Image (cartoon, rainbow, N blue to C red; front, top):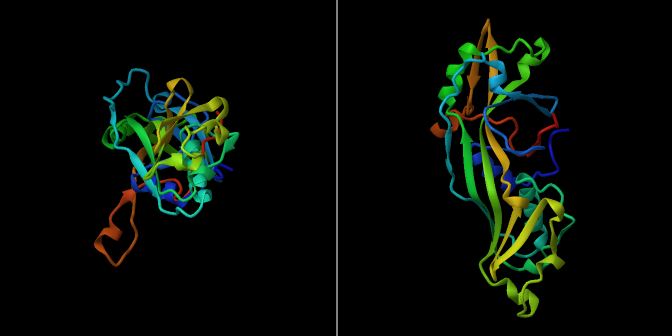
Length: 261
């Protein structure tokens, strides 16, 4: 199944609200746009969009830049279990899929804030993807799979994940420096660092930034032509905003795992 065990409502709603589908990718160095199939909850990469365009097709200008920090305020300060669940899910989204030790008991009773920081994006405008549709040739995709095609047109990357407390965490260590290794071990996939008495950061090894989410749209063939849709109907609602188109997402409320190629 492509749905991970990462079902933290707060994390997923946070990313969905920003128009992103949270994903766990099996590879780094992704460059949008990328073609996928999604069928029976199996999300499989089919290669870069350029593979389905004529060889002489000019590459459209790219959109690249910084995104604001994506933050989550964990208000349940009675137990570390909820915060630990969120942290484990968030680490998966930046490529740290297995942490040998993740014990936040030292943060019991603290009001915590999590944030994806050093967040960047890279991809194409929807309009640029739509202009490529006239040249698109998906004939190498089996006909029975062509109804399940999607294009990820923008990826979001996080340099690090940060956990902050509104009060000093040193009180949990009898005034001594935080021996973080006794509580958190990210193994070979990442590193943890105590930035200050209120801040702990998590990052991938060697400064590698992992894609943790994408903006995605669906492909649809009408006659001989292909069309790309990046939004979906908001549905009928009592309020005007409820009926407005909203960003397309493969699944709301879950994190999807991309299958290996």
